[in-house]
Image (cartoon, helix red, strand yellow):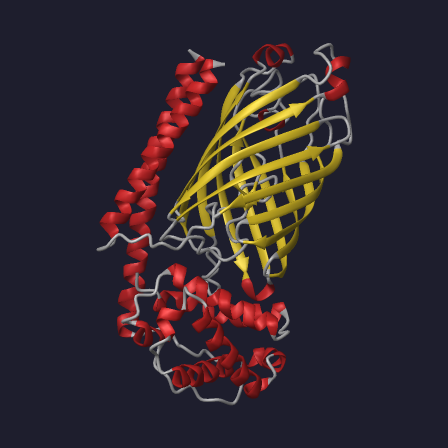
Amino acid sequence: MPTHLHTLKAALLLALAGFSSASLAQAQDDEEEDFGPDISGKLVLTGGGSQLEGSAGGGLTPWAVIGGQGTRDQIGASAFYTRVDTGDYHLDDFGVLIGINDRVEFSLAEMRFNTENVGALLGLGQGVTFKQQVFGVKIRFAGEAVLDSDRAMPQISVGLQHKRNNQSGVLAFIGAESDQGTDFYVSATKLFLSQSFLITGTVRLTRANQIGILGFGGDKNDSYQPQFEASAAWLLNRKLAVGAEYRSKPDNLGIAREDDWWDVFVAWAPSKNLSLTVAYADLGNIVIRDNQRGVYASMQVGF
Amino acid sequence: MKIIASRFILLSAFSLSVALSSFAQAQDSAAAARDAGKNSSAAMNPAPADTALRPVLEDFRGEAGLKSLMDEFMRGLLADKRTQPFFENADQDMVKKHLTEQFCVILGGDCQYTGRDMRASHAQMGVTRTDFNALVEVLQVVMAKRGIPFRSQNKLLAKLAPMHRDIETR
């Protein structure tokens, strides 16, 4: 679709614009601008993984951290591939992000939700796939999640995720109001270092059905509603964490009930350039099929 | 119509994000300036004693354990390209002595810290967040190598990490 290409181009342009403005801000702040030859100055795992929509975070929810391994003196970037198998469906999900001066994060992701046999049952065709592209921006607004262990103040970021779905015909048929939408969120992340515990809470304003895979708005509800997401990770050592996540979702469509999502995960970063996450995820009901549970696996590379 | 609307949302969201970003940056600089102002009159306590951490000191095998930890830590700092420039020309024995005292006091030991505060001792070093994190990493690796439990490592690091505000000058 040409419009999608245009979106991607526009997104890249915006990313470039943001990059130059951030560099400008840096140049004005410091007497000497010096990114240095070194990269990846963040402590391992503190750049987060990649969540479904491509922002740095856990698997389901964004964290307030800026993605990539760059500190405030550096640029970081990462790419990810995630696969979720729930029994009746599977999701392939991949994307890239850039983190600038630990301040701004731009991300692009594409989700491919494969309906397998359900597609045929619904008369859409065997294995019909819903594709969704997501462009995300996140800005660290206040606080320092990792080092300010003497303060209660968490790191707080605000962000948006603009989503476009390629199945406008099907979406209209099932009662979705739109094939595109923008989520807005505020995220707070705090590392309780003495307890080796990392906690994130996110409030998201959204109209998305099944995070956008089934479009935006519906016959039951078409307005923005606040949703709550949380992620908790217990650090076992410098490179290994286990945790759980929860994400509430609206229920806008008359044709199918929509459930909240949760998962339990293990995240392992053998190096700063690679992290692997495996989770058991419960995605509840997704169109005529209950109990969509299964394995979530994600790989992230970056610097 | 929809496309125009979405472009509009995207554009306004982006303008908003740039504005927020600049605002956040300004706020950060202001906070840093506040910290600096506060610290010029009174730097943070470089060795805030916490007697509740005595069991952690046991995990570090007491003052003797800290002393031998510092030998290994200094070797690590000199072996790492990122931290080497800060220590190769320093009085390494003095640094190790002060670090031993500092860690010992923080962990509730019967020691006396005889060094300067963190602001004064790092004023001329030009330490960045990247440098700071590099040192933390070397310390983490050395602590792990010595078999110090991860939770005890973090209890010490939780006391040291906030000192980034006095140590970083860039």
